Structure formats: C-alpha cells, structure tokens
Image (cartoon, rainbow, N blue to C red; front, side, top):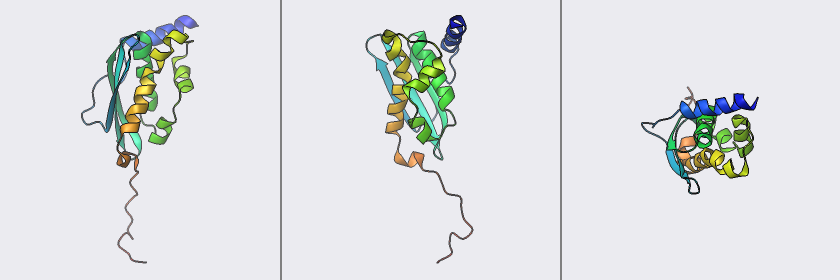
Length: 140
C-alpha cells in the first residue's frame, strides 16, 4: 500500500497540477523552508468569495512540490472561508503517507504559503456580490 502512495506523491512531483503563474492574481506569497531550500510561490484568484484560480511555482523536494499540487487541487473552487479553515491534518490526509518529523516542514510549506497569501488578499476579494434586485431603486 505504501508503494501506491509513494507513486502517487512522485506523480504529483513529476507532473504537478496547477503549476504556473496566474495573469492577474488577487494575492500572492512566496514561502521558503530555509532548512532545506524548498521554495513555493502561491497565487490565488478570488471571485465572488470563491478561490476561482490557484497556481504555484517553486522548487524543492518531492514532498513539498507534491503537497502544493495536491493542495491546489483541493482548494480550487472552494469558498474562501473554507480555504482559510483548511488545516495541517487535512493536508496530511491528502498526502496519504506518514511524514517523518524531519519532512513535516516540507509537507506544510504549501499550506503555510497559502495561509499567508489568503491573509494578504484585499478584504473586497471575499465579498460576494448580491444579485441585482428589480426593486433596487424602490424606496421604502
């Protein structure tokens, strides 16, 4: 069973999902792990209170890059409030393998970077536009 999960991690490392740069991100943040040199830049595009686009670039070990790939797949299309509530245990569940204490920082780099990017978004990015009402001009 572990071999299946290792292959899964290596596949996300070799062919990461959502790897690239957004044309007009709502927020962006570059995170790094100074202990091993892993780097990830996470960009998010928020529309109507939802993570409409997400992309990352970076370099590092298989765990850090696969973690970013899996995380971006999971967060895409998610309401911002739910994305902000995403936790380390959720990401570890996505990875599906036991992570040693030495590799935990590698696995969490993408989540920490996402959290910083979400914290830097403009407040207006999470506002959901109310539908236009036919009575919008009517006075009470």
